[in-house]
Image 1 (cartoon, helix red, strand yellow):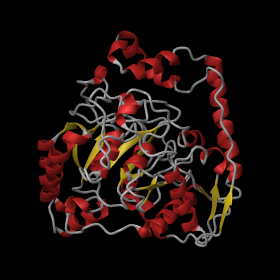
Image 2 (spheres, helix red, strand yellow):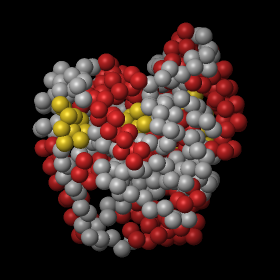
Image 3 (tube, one colour):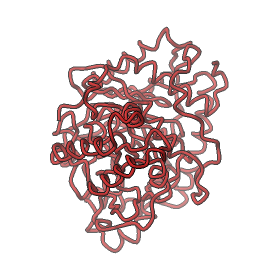
Length: 472
């Protein structure tokens, strides 16, 4: 397959195919332990009835009971309902609608669940119980998932650390003293630690990819409008996306297959046909042209991150048509024209009434957004459009970009909370502007460092212990 004129479907094929190629080095988990299975393996075992959904759900609940006191991944655990759902799946095997049927998952707690509280980890929403499911929740329930509960996040999904929610910080399964990244903090931690087989998060600047990187799992940022955001507490209307968090690229494809597609009640979803994502993993990559945007994205890299991403690039050389350096267009916001003003638009009635209920970081951020100038904001949106136009020129010469997801290992919770840690520039938010981004997993061991090389259009996230289960 030649990608000289790469279509959206062709790009996705390329992403998945390269992910599968690099993932061949991934060590095989202990298949005798159901909690070490991938979602695909669990789905096949359920279909063959070698294990029941109830058994699988009980194993997840026992692991949550054992580990989550330290991880703080769950905000709301709905164990009784989950077991009821699992038993119903076991009784109605003929209703199996997808590979997700009977699989225990959990959702980021800014995604509405009818009758089950959705807090967005915020005191102002602490007892909020939606009457209706979000569209992604509805689709997952229709596919037959077992919903274990709701997962921790940064307050209102604002930050990228996993430490600002009102229920306390989430802890990284690889080192409990380190952050998970955010805002989909509990989602990445729970999947990484084997508390559930997958999750769904939101991303408007890195909120799926950052925790995917720090926790060593797949965090895939979908294209804007690919998945409905209806029923998800909004952050930035013009940037919000919904994406899967899973253990493997193939598992992420299974989740995306279910949640993607047009929603007639959502103004942003596109009417494009949803392709069969799971078929792309075996596509050939020999004709792909890979771009490496070293300028900006490779600056201030931690040595372990630098060596890890170079290892990935070396791995691909000789397997693809070409690897070349490219320069991406830079998007500069207009002065006092931050698009995060969209955060304040939704929060205004709550924040203006009770600002003291918000985390200090959120208070500062929202107060700053009050000062955003309307004309400058419109200018920023104009520049976003120009950036999206200009990046298309890059893809006249390459098909995929490779770059680090994060420039450093996961910092400590303590230095994040006291704000003594200075984060390097973001490698994720630019791709919300440019519409090209994803997080995929890269397995080799690097002395148990939180090393997370990634790739712009395609991001591989390195798991610190070679893809094995974390030591939590």
